Length: 615
Image 1 (cartoon, rainbow, N blue to C red):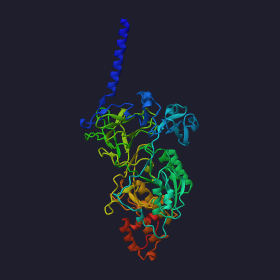
Image 2 (image 1 turned 90 degrees about the vertical axis):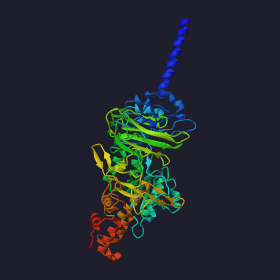
Image 3 (image 1 turned 60 degrees about the vertical axis):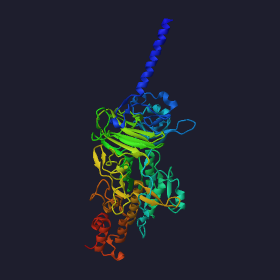
Image 4 (image 1 turned 90 degrees about the horizontal axis):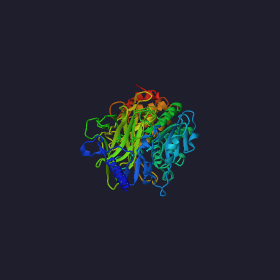
């Protein structure tokens, strides 16, 4: 009896100790590089609670799924198995939605090996990469299949627009489009989210009834971009293909437009899971297409100047990154998230893709309480991707003030790059943000015309739009190079009529890129014998110089203006000045041209291989 009582008491004490230990571990705090005024932050963990959901490395779990959410979930996997990101499931029956992942296979392995636990959506034989739909509970099985090298999370594409408003104004209808130059004979292909409302735009007269829709997609951004292009070059033949939900589908969209004979392709899509420090699967494909096809590829630079950071890891003394590099007590990135709003944070560093052996982790913490809200802690041990990301929703009842933190788990100091994606109601504080080098992905390809946005609010003193991404672009693999981006600038805010015939405003580099594409079509229709490289050179050489004299990485070669097209069409026929057509003498024309666009006529003539007439 005594022995039984003693045993019972020992077991009771052990139980209390275990409970007490758990309580201590759940309330332990360390400082993530902050001073005391911003509050301490919780130590890194693999699970966290936010309302009734748990977020593990960007993947949302319900309370019923917590049985397997122990600390070994993320760090035990050595083959780059990431927890696949997805939006929170709203299925009322509680069943899991499929999620998207990129599966990299060993050379010689076919996509058929993946059929046992996933559905292959796209397959790229050249890179042995598949885009698959898979149930979350099948991720580990997928990664363990013979022939599978790695499984990479898929992050949704970013559309390069900003919220519409009336603060700025630029009317695309202000472009010159009278006379014989309409872009006729040129085919322009657009890639964006979707054209679900295109029938309304056709009925209202905003678009012609002969737009070729190869893939409708989901969303309405594509309809607006088509309208901008049509307003600038009303004679061009228009095509549309949706961007799709994964990068391989995007590449297929490019190929489909090429197959239709499009000479100009324009997109406003960014892929945050493309490498920031080298050309990924999209950038490499587009580079190959441009080199093999005579096309002009135009892409929006991005609206990321005010939500971007880049800098070498700076240890604050405890393994956490100091975003200020020791210059400030504000050592992290700071965001205010209103109730119900979402945010995605993406971290990469300059290791070779799929070969990262330097392990960094990403955290989101409450600035007031120090509570850890989300963590992304994949293992990078030689075969991993240098990528961590968090998707987070504020489920509280008030604005949530959060900080973004980075910790080096192991390895060397690397160049870190962070993008924060959210809508305009989410406030991203300017502390430690870096505007430079905020172009990534396929717009950073040298052969692509990367288009920034001019602030259209002040026509007398035009500056760059505050959100417009800037260069240069740092590329580290296969060897280091510093690419000059952006290439050109265009109007950052255009007026469109849309599906209901009522004017509204369309802003962002999503507006500037199609404006440049439309002008490119006008120029090409004047000189159909020229190739895409020559058309590009004419656009760059005739752009209105803004900012620092000559090329700069903010405006590029300058702002493309339709007055260039007007003067080219009015002053030249064939290879000579058409002074008899306009009544303007060659010498007067030279002065007028310089006054209009600040580029000497001789330079344009040289680029276009035209005679400059009388000297």
